[in-house]
Length: 218
Image (cartoon, rainbow, N blue to C red):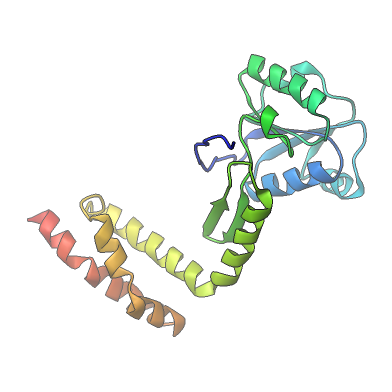
């Protein structure tokens, strides 16, 4: 039986994160954290070639020794990248004592949080999880979403973000109901974006939101 999880996106920009381990699993964790601009420290007696390269170019810090319980003090989150449940159980105990959240690779029992399958089409980031019960299904859905999303979808997301920012400056963002946004982003807006007529697409989107804006100002 899978656990119910609370989905959340963490802002790890320039925040300290600890990765325990120096092999393939650690590299997977590090690559994901680098995409979030985290400040990464890897603790392990040795690093594989890829991690050593990241250390040598200054993208990660390396503590060339085994993990010590005091390492839990300071990081925003900790990721354990090994395949030993007994070690993970000890790490989770240390993490609980330090008040820090722990992810243990492929070991949901010893995790405070699990990592979803991720689709990145900036500025879109989609996360898919089966609650740890079937990672293979999550990966399959990720592949299907990768095939579905295209550059036009990302462009639409960028345009809507720009319009939201404009409406905030006009102090008319909050009164606009969610269904107004949905109806405003119709096929014509997408067609204009596909034709690289971004200014016209923005003007159309703003006009589609015009009625809620006028209603809010009356």
